[in-house]
Amino acid sequence: MSKLFTLFACLLFSLVSHAQNCCVNSSNFPMLAMNIDFIAAHESPEPFNYSPAKGSMVSFATLDGKNGQAFYVPSDQTATSVLLVFHEWWGLNDYIKREAERWQSMLGNVDVYAVDLYDGQVASDQPNASKLSSSLDKKRAENIVKGALAKAGKDRRVATLGWCMGGSWAFNASVLAGDRSAATVMYYGFPETDQKKIDLLKSDILYMWASQDKFITRDVIEGFQNQVQEAGRQITLHTFNADHAFANPSNPKHDKIASAQAEKLAIAFLKEKLQLE
Image (cartoon, rainbow, N blue to C red; front, side, top):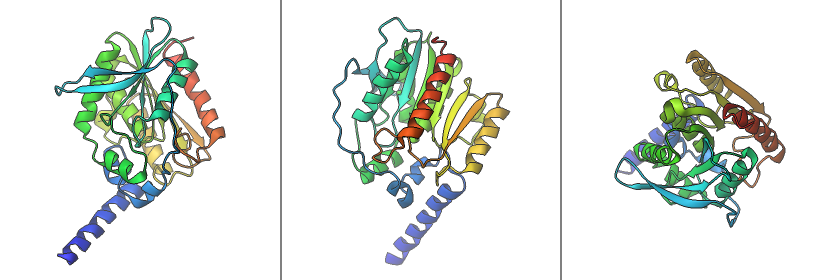
């Protein structure tokens, strides 16, 4: 029995390493989330409690007969556009709630929904983050996104933004938004490799890539870039001399300079695509 377990463990490690080194994408992220190097690269967030200024949690029906939830930050005016924000593997914590309010303030006349993919669960340490992200039910997450899109309203332009795992879900949400999709911002999100799915995307992409990223390598991101262009969409790639998760708001070692540069580019991109100015 012990030999069988050892063999299985070795096989699992081999598969995870393969996902890390050759073909990292949104589909095999759950396996990557169990990789010891990937786990070690994400330091646990420092304790943080945030008192929202104008945002609050809202719930909405999902197609599987359950309810989903999001942190909602409304515009002061009647908005014709909405931004869906997607958390990284820690979940919808107070850092993301603060980010949702910041992005709403910076963009102006847009409603922001920070979507909770974990149904209320939040990780504060690496083992739990690995468990939550690796066990995420893709179908359930898609139903949550669809519920958020319905909650936002069918006649509004939709932009998406997310970090790491959330960057991948920003792409997925834009695909699910169909013709309503106006802009996709991916902060080092694991690229989709299925050309058929990429072909469904109706918006252009702004992608923030960290050149020191050991998980999303240059060949991976260039392959994604080629596939998006093949689908007839534009993808603007900005490279930063930083490591994976450099703009993660809960990362104790986040790169403030690179984050500010990326943020400026993202704001300009979103304002243009959402016609906010």
